[in-house]
Structures are given as C-alpha cells and as structure tokens.
Image (cartoon, rainbow, N blue to C red; front, side, top):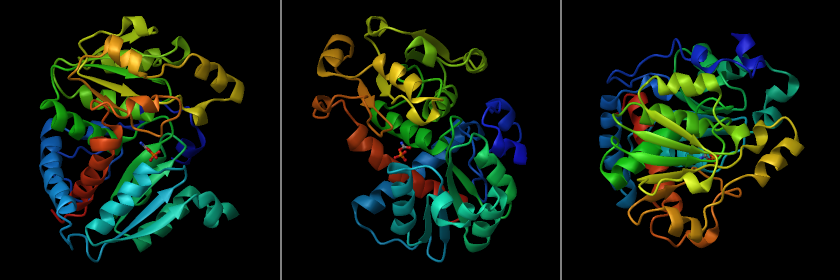
Length: 337
Ligand code: CP
C-alpha cells in the first residue's frame, strides 16, 4: 500500500474496492468514501444532526465525547473542515490533538514514513481526522490505524465525504428532498474532490440531473463520466453560461483547484476561462426559489455582491451545518449515540 501514497495518479475506483459499508452501524467505522453510505445511513446521520444543531443553538453543555481524544492531522491547509471538526469535538466535551502542517511541525519533517505517523497518533487518540494532498491517503491511513476510526477530510483530488454529508443535509433542510432535483455544479469537475463526492451522494437518490459547467479542459475524465453516469444520475456537461437551465433547484459553485495544476501557467489559463456568480447571472438564469452553495474558500467564484441575496447559503446554513453534521458523525463513529 506504500505505492498508494507515492502515486497520485491512482484510479479512484480501485481505491474504494474494500471500503466498509456503514449499513446502519457507524461504530468504529472509517469514513473514506461517500460510497459507504446508503440512504438509510444518511437518514440516521441527519436525524442526529438535527439534535446536534439544537445543542449548539441552545448552548447546551454536552459531555457526549468526554474522555475522548481526536487527532486532527491536516497535511493541507483548511479553515472550515479543521475548524468545524475541532469545534465539533469540543462542543461535545472531547479534546483534540491539533496537528496542522505535520510536514513542518512533526517528525514527518525528519523523514518519518506516513504509516509511522498514523500509528503514532492512533496510539494517542480515539479517532483520526486526516487531510492529505495525495489521493488514496485516507484509505491507507484507515488500513494502518485499524483500531480507531479514520475520517477522510479530503484526500487529493479524490473525495471529501464529510463535505458532501453537510451539503446533502443542507439541501434536504432547504429543499425538503434529495431526489427529483436538477442542479448546476460549476468550477473544476476534473480536480474537485468535493464535486466527486457530491456526484456520488446525489447518485444515491432517484431522478437527479446534474449540469456540470466548466472550461472544456476541466471536465470529468471520460472514465469518471461513464462510471457515475452508469449509476443512473444524469450528467450533462456544458461549457457556456448560456446553457444553464432556468429550472435548477440549486447551484453549487467551486473554485479552480490551484494546488492540483502542474504549473502556474496552466492554472492562470484555466482561471481566465472560469465562471463567476454575479447578481446579473443569478438574475438571468436562476429561479427565485433555488439556493446557491459553495464549499469555500471563495477564490474567484462568487461576487461578494451576491452574499446579501437570500438564496446565497454558503455563509448561512452551509458552513454551520458542517459543525452539526460532524458532531453527529463523531458521536456515531465513537459509539456515543
Ligand atoms: N470546504 C472546505 O473543505 O474548506 P476548507 O478547505 O477550508 O476546509
């Protein structure tokens, strides 16, 4: 498995052949891929998420995770995922070991192998939350730390399953259903782990249609397009704003993933062709009841003039739901709910 960590070109389907399904029992499971979830698993998670939201809103002291230590190992920068996992543990009375940039502050800087770092934090904690730049690293960590849950907080251009959990919760909360939806997902389908997990999530439900808007060079690989289309979700790739349908229930905007480009020149070329949400774009193509989501960070995706529009949910429900969803997930994985 060392090969996985040194080869960023891994086939993402191959990476998930051995992930364990949740099947209604979250206790001690690793969370590596959205493909581990069924609709019933999401129902269980979202029911608990509602309770977690109430704990936060009511400032209710909770000792649900008292006595538990969670290691947050972030080999890539993060504001929301790191912050919400740290807040989730602490809101429930647990503690965190916060290791941001392990390649600078830990013995990784001295050449420690990835598996040894994971084994070390396995010894100190009850769960590990891992973000890493290499696709497949979460699965390798899960296999290495076999005695505790490992949660994928984003592995390279592969997946970001907890982002999709909070996004699906937000969509269900706002729209009242997760089937029969038409949506626009824009940005960088080729490189965005968030888009890859979201398509997996939406494909769990019937009759969903995804319009994918991007420059041609950032479309899904043909393998991914065929693989996900075979699940029944309709994926329609478009390269012009003029092709945005007027009946979308939600728009999901993502940034061009600078860190996945081979050179600055290629990134800057892609940025020139990016699409930006402006008040005019919303006025021309969006209906009044849709919602606008963005996993953030905002890097050339949405004009701040849009923030005041009530349809813009990224700084409203979406980031807050990240806290509630991760509280629920941790409580379930640690067997405390
Ligand atoms: N959405 C998201 O993953 O944001 P961060 O990179 O700030 O965690």
